Image (spheres, rainbow, N blue to C red):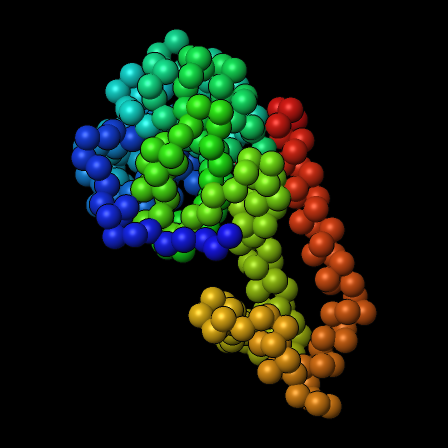
Length: 282
Ligand SMILES: NC(=O)C1=CN([C@@H]2O[C@H](COP(=O)(O)OP(=O)(O)OC[C@H]3O[C@@H](n4cnc5c(N)ncnc54)[C@H](OP(=O)(O)O)[C@@H]3O)[C@@H](O)[C@H]2O)C=CC1
Ligand SMILES: O=C(O)[C@@H]1CCC=N1
């Protein structure tokens, strides 16, 4: 399946819908800011936070009313739950008495299956599980979407109307969500880690840190745009950089000697396993 960008009509937020972001930390605030950039009126949005000072900060930054979780559950048609997986049970205990079965509940939490929500909310509540990533902040997010038992096409479309303006979306069966979390949910962190390590290498080679950082970041951007836009397989793109008896092949040999490919495979497998563990509240 190919990730999709929003068709023009999906980018126009519906005015009749009110959307609440519950637990607006890093990912919740990123989504809130993305919805506002995409044209949602702050008056059609609500936000909740655990600490009053965080609620005030969110209101000041985005002009969105900060309310209690119970108020959000009663007033909003769509509830985006963005607390940590370990806080989700307590949040649902708080929400359940106030959440009518016609609400669309979207969870951004790693690991937690849609059944967890369905068991704790009114019978028939539509739940959609989404795994976004932090580049939603720059409208280059990757959001992976799965329907729960009671979510139909209209619920998926409403979810995509929120997430498509801030990047790409992809629908997958829920059984693939833990893998998606390992790949794209956590994915940006691996690239930041590589940039950090390669910048250190630049320092070892005698470059000032700022210059090393700029060289690596621009190389990363160029490589990412070529990967996205050229239609070429990554192996072909790498071969085009790798001259016979040149510099690149020496570096590639060291990467292979140090098992970097195997390390990446093991790393993503570990992330997938942790996502599975989170399902049990660990
Ligand atoms: N960060 C990422 O890259 C991604 C995160 N996710 C998922 O998003 C969720 C949030 O992650 P992240 O944004 O990083 O975490 P944060 O800790 O930054 O955000 C969670 C927020 O929820 C608040 N909160 C907790 N309980 C409640 C409550 N009962 N009512 C209202 N607010 C509450 C927390 O308040 P307080 O500040 O007081 O702790 C915090 O501000 C997680 O489930 C994670 O798996 C998904 C994709 C990517
Ligand atoms: O590290 C985490 O658990 C969250 C989920 C995906 C990205 N960050």
